Image 1 (tube, rainbow, N blue to C red):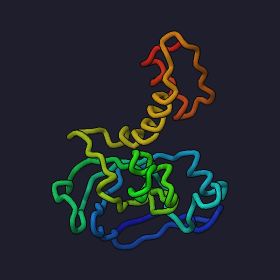
Image 2: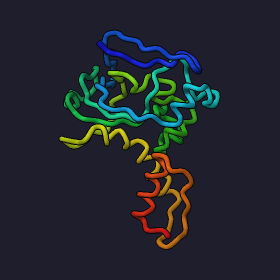
Image 3: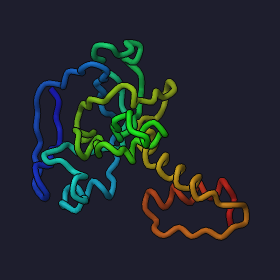
Length: 190
């Protein structure tokens, strides 16, 4: 049995139950251990996502961790049993932006787990295996669900390139703001 929260349309949701999904070519089925709730999930529920950045009906959840239960054809069988997190953006991998390592800016299409593809507010999640990151044995899967927002903030702080002693302000004390403070403290701005 596999359950999932489905946002049918802005403001309308239901819980579905059925058989676990079967992984296709290059995919892995992950048993979700933990999923974070992001402000963009609230935007999805409220219908406030920009045009083209949500596909209803959809299962939300782009911040998650879990364990690989099964893999499809042409997928490394050693992934079965691995604790994992995954990237959400499913870029075309052929446009210039994807080849530069920026699938979030894919020139072909916007396609992301939890917004245009089923996400992790479910017992099981299908993900292209190429998007998985294997965690070390014994990893705390609840904490690992924070790796996606942490990676976003690490990239932002790295891009901002604060210098030691430089004054930096963080506006907002939510998850992203707290992560930003931790990354900034590590680079020692004022």
